[in-house]
Image 1 (cartoon, rainbow, N blue to C red):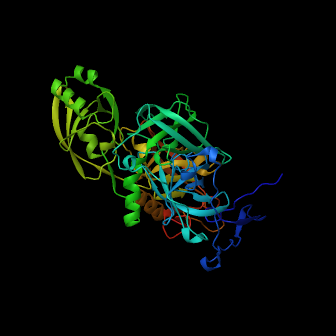
Image 2: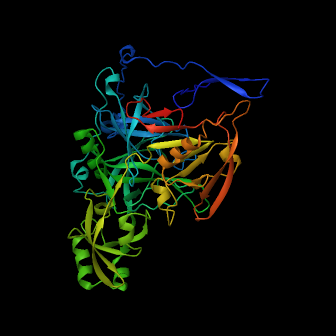
Image 3: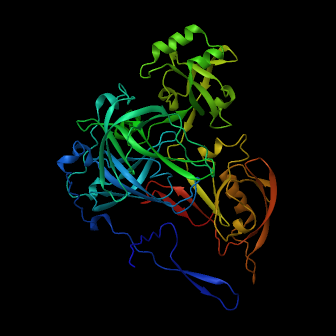
Length: 521
């Protein structure tokens, strides 16, 4: 059997091991890594567009913007269980190489991204943005690597792109999508329902889509994803895969449509500045509430009439309430309570979750209903990181990082910012009791609350260079950890810097992979 394997030496060293008969240790010798070709040596590649048969109209208008996106994660960080992902992408700016895909295709920032154009040209890409609440990511490839014009931008319906219109129940749409073998799927159908996207908290914690409305279709095709468009071939929505878990902890995926207007703030900012826009949040999980339920909680008839008058898209008036807090230690968490009904936002009635899902202001004025009384609050917002994770530290087989957003919503109190995301099989961390989902709070009795303190403590204790003459350099270290239930344990870990040397990853835009490896702490 013959298979094609991609060898990536920028994440894992290429080494030859040989046993030392005197010490019994296996010693390593680095093997020279293949040198990447210089830019001047790379020949531009042609990516000819392939038209679809006339029977698949109106897919031809959007088909040229389809690409295939593959993502490979070298490490299981940010709650990942798998390492390989694949799905369709849509070119939103060909001259800048910007491609949009769902977060079931590019779930995290640590990894290798490749974009396949016209089923024949494979180009490396970098993650530009991982939307922290909506289910899409943006990656960038270099269009200068192409011989000829880049793929066309996805044609969009201007009213839907501007948010003047939304997909509603009963709308006729065309699904243009691809299957696993890149076969096009085109189907005319109708919007069956427009509802809030419901996703469960996952174990281990990972990204979940929140505070956004999605649509379901009458006759949903079996596919990886694509776009929803009008009969004239203009995109009005994204057809994406949303990842979650069921009650038994099994991973699940569901297909649903998202309004194309969700892309506009991000794409406009990337076009104007080349950088992701500032994203801020109230750190609350919002959910719709019927007016009848709000009336039972003490909402006045005047407010209900206001909600009915401002319901621009919805068939029946709905209010939004705080179903839960997404982070325990933010200013918003101290002001907003679970069960609060949101009535006004900066003086305007709250009638759509998109108003509050992501905001740009550093604080917002809210009027909420709490305990049958209306309360006015000025709530500070929290800045969201468009890359989520920017640093990973490896120590004795434990991959340690700052707690990411999905972790914060599952704890009542944050023990520290030194979170164990993964332990490698057979490592000291794995064998001596360190587990994913634990926080390190002390090393040898010294408090560590941040990654910088953790690394400084390891350097101070000289754990990565404690070898003595005629010894293997092994020693035991006391590590105090706290689990999700806030139970504290003290573990004794045998350090092995020979087979499990320390290193760290840091985000680096100048690196081809977007990350650089620092061999020693």
